[in-house]
Image (tube, rainbow, N blue to C red):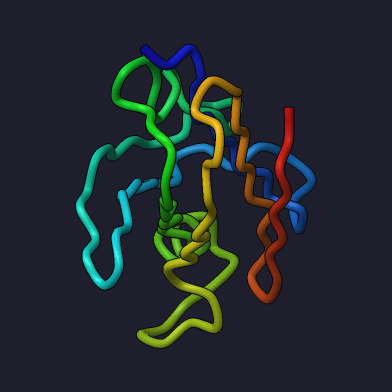
Length: 119
């Protein structure tokens, strides 16, 4: 059984605060196959209320977090229109050791984003 977990949070670097209300989808990736395993929305602190995956559901392999940034940017008045520079932001990453904690945050603005393996 795995003791690891996957967590995330979203920070709005343009506004200098946590990004509340960002919808996040998590997929397990195998070749060209994507299987949705979780969906959540960030809280007032820009975090998820519970880990995206934990325990026996968190296994070694490839995953993809999809952050629905366009919805958030429109809702906060930072973007408008049918076509946005940043809309859905996919971050694909590998988990070689599911006994560890993997934290994959997103820092966003209307025209840029970054991520890293946090703690």
